[in-house]
Length: 151
Image 1 (cartoon, rainbow, N blue to C red):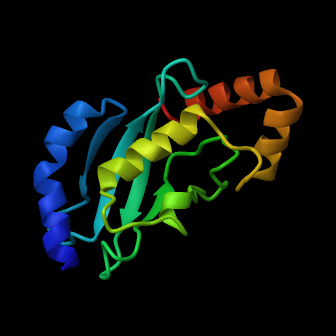
Image 2 (spheres, rainbow, N blue to C red):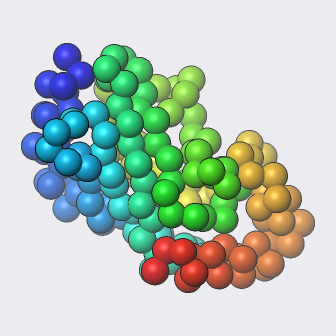
């Protein structure tokens, strides 16, 4: 089931990416393993991530779509909801997962999270505290990391 669903999503991904400009690309890392993909997100405009290209590694379980993929930022990013190891804190990858979701919908949600962080549910305490206590410094730090690691 998972393999068929992933092949279906891969065939449709080019059309869906055209409708979602925040996604630069998404697909299997190589032809030999349909369960490991890479995606590239563009940093949302008018955010400290603007102009950045963020690489994500996606690992699909054999129970997909009944279990969510594991998604990790490979590009370093300073964000309250993304750990220093790249783990993403977004509800649809945990308790709000649904088999009706597709990878493109998940990537759009992650892009929305970049534009609108939730410091009240952090994966990275330092950036969450800075976001709440000194927003200007947070923006400068996030912009610096984007310029350093995502361009």
